[in-house]
Image (cartoon, rainbow, N blue to C red; front, side, top):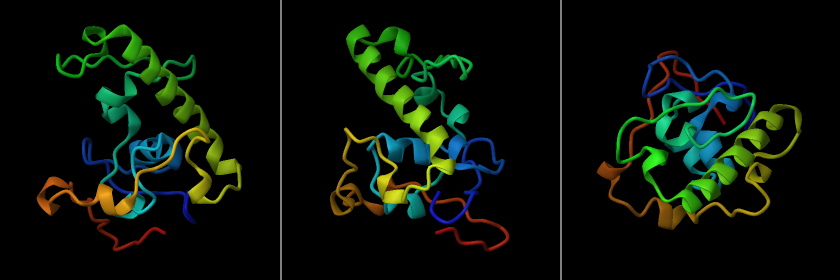
Length: 143
């Protein structure tokens, strides 16, 4: 993680996201879905608290998650797309777990075959469309 081992409060369950290895935000960054700048500005949650994403982790060390909302349930989606998504999310999750001991710079966290989006384009959405980060009640800032 970028100079710290802890993150923010989970916007779903309200508990602290204590480590990069349980961070949905960092998983999405490793997958190439958010820019580096998003790590400091977007809300976080536990990977398991986002069933729509966690259901794609297919690994013996990750107990399966079932997403019951029909619009997100992978069992209702195109099987070829689901296989590709499972491959990407699982590879990113495995990499995420290796990061604390890796010594890598945060800019090198993403999978080698993905490129995070351009920050300007990513944040071009109206401000009200972006979720606000849950403030840390102790006033800590993480870089």
